[in-house]
Length: 424
Image 1 (cartoon, rainbow, N blue to C red):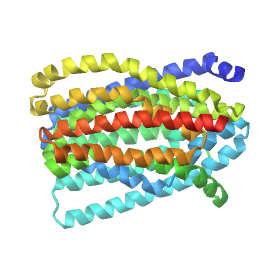
Image 2 (cartoon, rainbow, N blue to C red):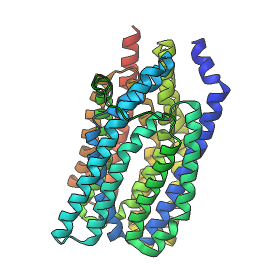
Image 3 (cartoon, rainbow, N blue to C red):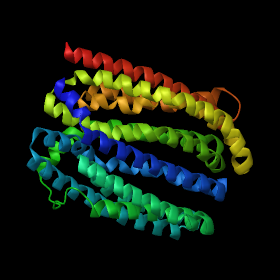
Image 4 (spheres, rainbow, N blue to C red):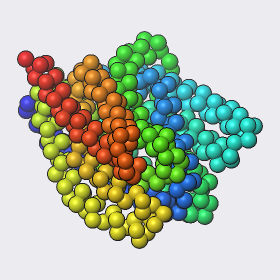
């Protein structure tokens, strides 16, 4: 316990954590502000096309097979054990595999766009498909780069790179204003390219791309269970749009965009906390092999998010209708759904605290949660839409809130019973 206390009381760790958190908040604020301006500049029907196409991005990621998830766990763990050489070897294999996926994905994107153009699809769909495929291609390599930023020095470097990215997000905004839909997709592509180029240049592990089967299998064994669970969780974020697209069409998907923006705002802090503390958990476990600290950590993280949720909900409830009516009249129909979605902030700690199960490699229990998450995230909104009448967006959000409460309680129950079972 003394070692754990010393680890978290280390001034360097707290300073880096503070800087990383502050920059991440700034990045999220800029992204959110840019998204708000885009909603104002782009009509719902065109925004609906883009939002519908981006659903494919998450499903393309299935080909990763958990290799970066394995590196995300084993790299900091091996560093905590003092075995950096092994961590470097794992990074070489991961880099080779993710680069290979990037090249294959880009080639398939070009072929697919030629086919769509030959079949006389709308140019907006063809152009959007090319950008979505290109983003998916780049994101394969980006995910490798991200998991290599794990030491305090690397987090500082990542913070600097993220800040530079936000400057380009601001500078390039006129592209969207003047070119509308095509400016939106170009802007999305340019920002990701710039960000990944800077991350590549400042990457903390400058290793060769070298495939070694034994290391690949080791990463697959560790990362595949985590990846499957995280992947299943990520695709649940598309369920709302799929349900709305099925029952209401592209226009309703466009109207849902500001509601999804609220969801993005809510996920900001849990994502930051998860990215920062998950590698710290594994380093700590590598040093102490003592899981007893993880239960209090899970409780504190959830409590922290609940405390922050109260003012967020109150402000959102009174401000949203005024702002939407005055500045976004085309999307005023979304106001009630946006107000209701702010309540989801109460359950945002689930995203962070669930990492406890990954840290102790309790994959069987975590898979139980993920299966429940898939059923709840799709089932509750679909049932509300199918059996109740009213505004489509509002019904979907009400179903989503019910699923969040259910998953919040289930997550705490599984973490507690698993940790105490292991301790006993």
